[in-house]
Amino acid sequence: MAASVGFLGPLGTYSEEAALLYDPSADMPYPTITAVGEAVASGEVEEGVVPIENSLAGSVIFTLDLLISQPKLFIRGEIDLPIEHFLLTKPGTDPAEIKVIYSHPQALQQCRAYLEKNFPQAEQMASLSTVSSVQDAFASPVPAAAISPRRASELYDVYILDRGIQDVAANVTRFAVIGLSDHPPTGRDKTSVAFTFDVDTPGLLYKALGEFAQRGINLFKVESRPTKQSLGEYIFLVDCAGHREESPMKEALAALSQPISMLRILGSYPLWSPKGSP
Amino acid sequence: MAASVGFLGPLGTYSEEAALLYDPSADMPYPTITAVGEAVASGEVEEGVVPIENSLAGSVIFTLDLLISQPKLFIRGEIDLPIEHFLLTKPGTDPAEIKVIYSHPQALQQCRAYLEKNFPQAEQMASLSTVSSVQDAFASPVPAAAISPRRASELYDVYILDRGIQDVAANVTRFAVIGLSDHPPTGRDKTSVAFTFDVDTPGLLYKALGEFAQRGINLFKVESRPTKQSLGEYIFLVDCAGHREESPMKEALAALSQPISMLRILGSYPLWSPKGSP
Image (cartoon, rainbow over all chains, first blue to last red; front, side):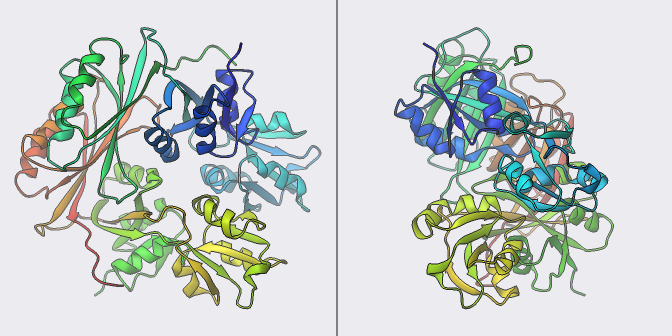
């Protein structure tokens, strides 16, 4: 039986693109990241695909909060999706006549230079999402376009006016595959952990990272992020090379737990490797 | 002569609130973070106020990129601003009649539970900013409200229907004050540095953090963030206690430069302490 896969909806978003890249049968959209987490925790779906990090915008706090607060959930995979913004119109729209361009404000901002150069006269209008912007453009009384993911162009009868219109070419979002267990060792794995300290003593983070460094374990990512209590208290997030069931990671994690007040192993899982075209 | 202070506009945003908290004469809004940086670099304004970190959304990548790429700019101060969303209407609007609520999609999301509980029938509509949402609500053909900063309520003739409506009470944005030099020592300072390594050897970050730990220097923040090239290459950002001109920070920074390919001292500046009410 194929696993059922939930993802952050609505249909047509980059999250659906990532979910389809992971499993072409993925067809369960949920309205929020929290709802995806609840569907996985309750067994409604076997796996969930949620954004965890973007190369421009950084970590997705909602996903990290979900993983830290819900001990039943683990990361069991990752997907790196290049973000490519498409410019879509209703078929028959004359590009020279476009008066309004709709999208989520963040996507409009990411295409700022392109829009100023190519559509200096068009008014920019906000949409709730990069998918609802297609509906907004279609409903517009004047000629309009929408900035949307490729996947949205497959769901609506649209004309693709342009693609890759974001100002910074290298825009990649990493998605996490979450489940009730993590992934068995594959020989090319990664482990994500989160931890905090009770006291704010100089050197505690240094000591913790030493457990990895002294065992020759490479760190892919270190992040201290403010807890919700105040800007001054931090949770540390570390991604490192290796599987939690194998040496030397196994020993590093055991040693790590000593100076730490909370340690949550978010999961071990294979490093992402794209398999040709989806 | 009072320093001229630029900030991320438009008028009425949280950035203006932060700038006014720092200097009540601040009156130079700029359209983007980059434009604030250019105004400071060219001497058009003496100081600029830009968001650098939010307790929910994490680091503001545009600001970090600006500081890393523009060696003339330094951080010379910080401002912590509690984010409080206000619900504003045109005077005379009956709350029970509200059919539409406008805001930036991020603000709508931050007030999700409040809106579902108090305005389940109201349609949520996207605005380009939390300030333009006031204009959108005023222009609405049906009774409407806007989610906006307190400062917006002072710029328009509005009725404040509610305040503090965000679902997570503790939502704080940290702003950086940037200038052509950083701040002289005050005895209660902080230093921000950014660095990268040429090679991805296990233990290099550990060795770098050791220069602080071995000297008893407390770390407030450590962040590895992807460079624009790919998700896998990282710049490390560290905030630590002390001033770059004073011991032991001075020695730590000197020792740090050895295993590192790029070291940028973003500035030393006094820790934020709110002075009563603005």
